[in-house]
Image 1 (cartoon, rainbow, N blue to C red):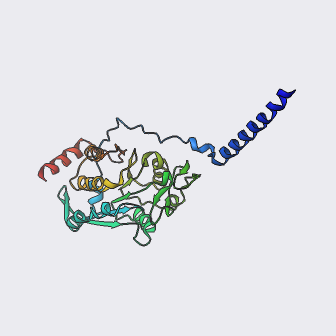
Image 2 (cartoon, helix red, strand yellow):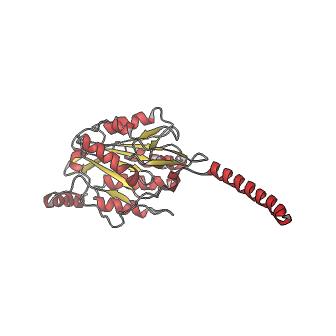
Length: 287
């Protein structure tokens, strides 16, 4: 009996300890979504065919590129593109004897109404290339004036927002994308943001199809390293101005890893036939 008296306080103490540990753990316990898997990356051996549809983009005598830098980009990265853009702006690019005047516009997180201007650019049939470089907000969409000023365009997955403690979880909806009407003219849309192929290809391709819009969607398969994004963007623009094919454009993008590997992912809308290639190669040789 004495032994039981001595053991009972120990049992009660142990039970109290376990109860405290349990309650503490309950407070810190994350929702089931915390087991969220990393985005799938499946394009290791994908080499895109064809080339951008230069005939369509140059048809109106202008080649217009709208570049949007998202929220939280380093200032020096953004400023690094301005000298090249100032040099190129107003020059001509030639394809099959046709000249197109180069017009480049740069928008940043301090540009008033940048998110609205992004949608306007996507809907403007005269703009040939729209580029976004910035955060993907874990699949929620493109972030502009601040982290919550998002162009909502996700695939519907559950998002783990790591800017809060404990983490917030919410659905990656696509209201802004659905409110965007893409014109029937060919253009290129590049989403240079973390895992954009896994986060956005499904929702964006679906919307393109609904609008019958012939758009080449260019995405990436790993997180971007934003300190060097200007190198990737300038390479991309330079390759377009030198009439490169998608294989070359991907090679140049993929080579700019800077401590983080990445892959450009393209499923071309336009794949030229043999006659188109002969004409294209002849023009490239003249240049």
